[in-house]
Length: 112
Length: 115
Picture 1 (cartoon, rainbow over the protein chains, first blue to last red):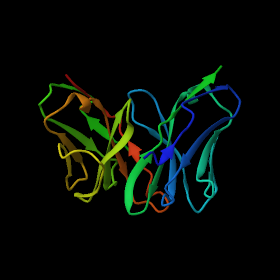
Picture 2: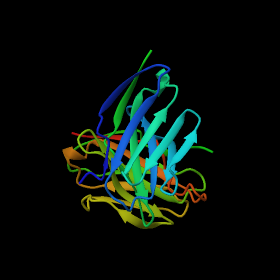
Picture 3: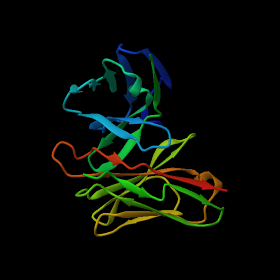
Picture 4: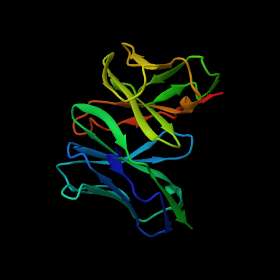
């Protein structure tokens, strides 16, 4: 049972444009969501997170939006840069079960 | 602060052998989690330790075990290795900062190959 889903395995975006990565979840107990960036053969790097009591969180070029009613979150990267090319994972967690449940990842390619 | 470190970075073992992987968390972090990444199954949670106690466990067989020491360093052990255990094993630590309790920071991983 895939509780966190990233339905787009890949995404290509022109440099300077906005990249939007999407994530859906099914477990309504999740109360905290995170985005990680990963290069091959390396550990995931934490990017940004959001608590379920908020609907938006910004950090520089990265903004995460949460729509609880739709059980959907998205990561916006503006402007996209070549160094943003990587696999992006969304993850979810809830109090009392401190394990991250990851989506399957979206490979983002920024075209120069 | 120094990040999460894992040793060794690469390992090659034979079926039936056992292996121990080590993880040193970020200084001050007391929670250490282990994950397995494979192409077919993605990133899957193995177990989490907090203050030397296993607090959460994923759906892996008993061949996978771990422990945490008083300095928060953690080890993971896999006994009777199978070919399917070939994977990138990732360790993550998290602290207790208010509003950031759930943020886990990952090490570079140990690439285990079972032949």
